[in-house]
Image 1: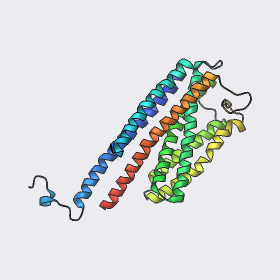
Image 2: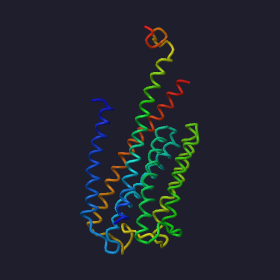
Image 3: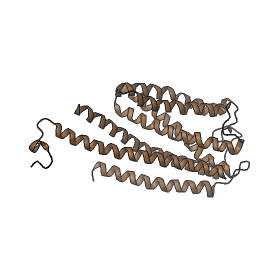
Amino acid sequence: MGYLFAAYTVFWALLAVYLLLLTRKTNRALAEIERLKRQYERNRPGADIPDGGQPGAH
Amino acid sequence: MNLAERMTLMQWATAIVLFAAMTTALAGVFLYAPNERAMGVMQKIFYFHVSSAWIGFFAFGVAFVCSLGYLLSRKPLWDQRALAAAELGVLFCTVVMVTGPIWARGAWGVYWVREDLRLTTTLVLWLIYIAYLMLRATIPDPARKATVAAAVAIMGFFNVPIVYMSIRWWRTHHPAPVLMGGENSGLDPRMKLVFFFCLATFTLLFFYLYAKRVRLASLEREIDDLYRQLE
């Protein structure tokens, strides 16, 4: 009986760890894309940046 | 409702169906399927062990087809699909590599029999695709990485039929096939029903995880593109 439960526990543990890693990586990637897009917009030639884009400068 | 919202809704719907199917599969294994005469309750490892093995083989097959697709078209999408499938293949193969020895310890008294060719060929298959994932991490150029990885995935897949046939070609400690195994093989109808239900559930699980992993791969590609535009 112990072997049976060990095998099923391993299955659920592996699945849970994989899902957790996948979700964390996806969320991190989404945040990184948002950050890079903002940076790209700021660096774009002709971007409309008031007062040099300094926060609180206007 | 836009496409992204529809995708999220579909993912949630799949997750709910999957949860219900997994619960039913567990109930089938523990409450409906009869105990095997020789091994008793321990034989119930069979349902998730064999389903994981079949889905692992299927995942490596998908990686094989997508790698061929990449080599023929050179489109990154094929590479992302191959990576997702290979990674899931490794996940399911890991389940096999852990549940198998646990079952062996209970049935044979040892975790591993060195001369057993089913065990050895499965280990080799698992290591090939772990090498595939490691290799990807070491090559910085995306096009070169995808080409080399595709070659490894294609060559690695040729081990799958060897693993599958190993218990037919050589007599090993590993049990003989109970499905499609010949005249004296077979399963109790209730066991067969539960097994095929588990297999269907694992197939659904594979596609659920696959969609999530392909999405992550495309996000990673988008990040690389954004970095290149910023340089």
